[in-house]
Amino acid sequence: LFLSQVGGNMDRHHYEVFTKFGDDGFLLHLDNARGFGRPSHDEVSILAPLTQCCMIKRSTLFRLKLLAQSEYRLSDVMRASLSRDPLTPVLTEDHLQALDRRLGQVLRTLGKCVKKLGEPQVVITDFVESSRVTTSNR
Image (cartoon, rainbow, N blue to C red; front, side):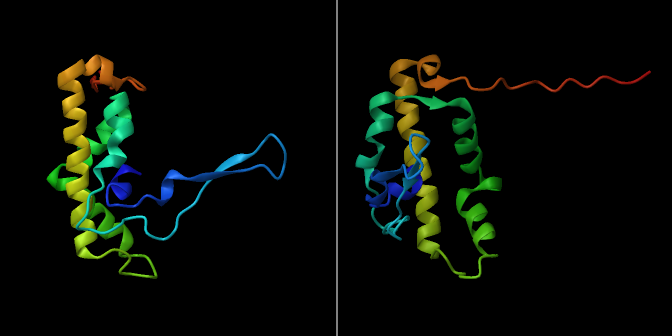
């Protein structure tokens, strides 16, 4: 969500609540077909919730860091995924490169939060990483 909104896309700030069936409604996010914005513009104001709250789930941070590594780069993952779309090309190369740049901005923002507040205050444990222990069968 942040990665598309950082690109000047402000349309996803709004949502509707679908309540046709009473109290068991659900959120309906509206997309005005500009989800990735202009690749040359990064709307950093969209990071305000992150800078104000300075909190992220460990699992989310883990995935963001993974997508920042060269072997799992977000632009490469998206390019591969979108290559199978019947409407290819869905995103331009500039848009794909913007995803990597914006991911970097998100991670730098989180780094500032950790530096200011400490990791235990910023990174919320939602799963426990296990260290794989292998035992040999005798």
